[in-house]
Image 1 (tube, rainbow, N blue to C red):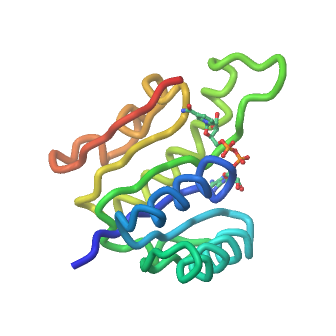
Image 2: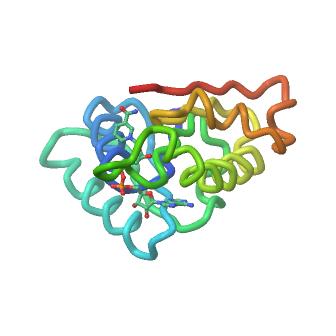
Length: 148
Ligand SMILES: NC(=O)c1ccc[n+]([C@@H]2O[C@H](COP(=O)([O-])OP(=O)(O)OC[C@H]3O[C@@H](n4cnc5c(N)ncnc54)[C@H](O)[C@@H]3O)[C@@H](O)[C@H]2O)c1
C-alpha cells in the first residue's frame, strides 16, 4: 500500500514539500491549512499536474485533520515565517500554539506517525517538546525537527 504524508501548512514551505513528494511519487499527500480553500486548491492543482509531470499520487487538501488519518509521516510547516527584524526566538512564541494544535490533532488521527517540524527554532519549541502535550509521553511517537 502506498504511504501517506500529511503536510500541515499549505504555504511556501508546505506546498513545496508536497511538490517534491509528488514528483518523486514517495506517497499520497494531504495538505492541511487553516485558510479555507487554499489547501484544497493547491492540492487540486498538484493532482492535475500529475499527468503532465508524470507522477501518479493522490493529493488532497483539507481544513481539518480527519482526512489525515493514518498518515505515516506528518510534516508541520504551518506558522508564521520570520519577518524583517524578527529573531528566531521571536518566532518561538508566535508558532508555539500552531505547533501545539497541529501536534494534538496529528496524534489523534495518526498515532503511529513520524512528525517532522520544519520550523527553524524547532529544537526549542518542536512538537516533541511542548511541555503540556500528553503525546510527548507516547513511546511510539517519533519527533524530528529541522533547524536552519
Ligand atoms: N527550516 C527551514 O529552513 C525553514 C525555511 C523556511 C521557512 N521555515 C519556517 O517554516 C514556516 C512556514 O514558512 P512559509 O514560508 O511556508 O510560510 P507561509 O506563510 O508561506 O505559510 C504558512 C502557512 O501556514 C498556515 N497556517 C498558519 N496557522 C496554521 C494552523 N494553525 N494550522 C494550519 N495551517 C496554518 C498559513 O495559513 C500559511 O498558509 C515558518 O515558521 C518559517 O519560519 C523554515
